[in-house]
Image 1 (cartoon, rainbow, N blue to C red):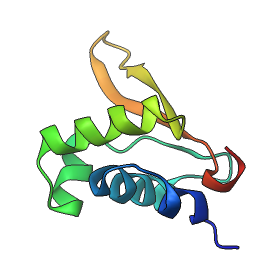
Image 2: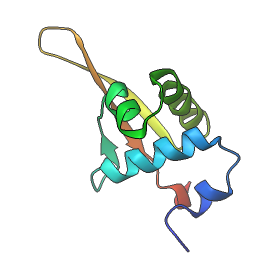
Image 3: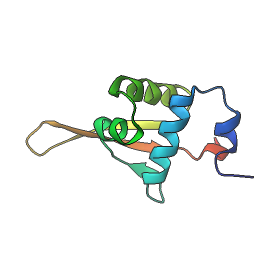
Image 4: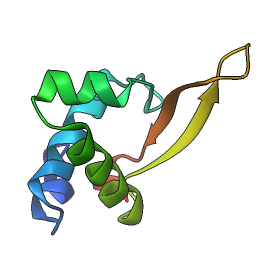
Length: 89
């Protein structure tokens, strides 16, 4: 079976599938990555709003969790995404 088998058979919208595959491609062995929303949108040629909706879809369906990261100065940084392996969910 392929890595994305359960993702392909899910009822997720195509935006969520696309963003999950993007994050998976950029994650480390533990499934962590932290690209900015703007970077994801630019590289996938999607709007920032579409990327945000996709992330909400993925969170609701258990494919990822996110954690806000902070700069030393106290400002917000990009989110840390923790991907769940799609075939082991």
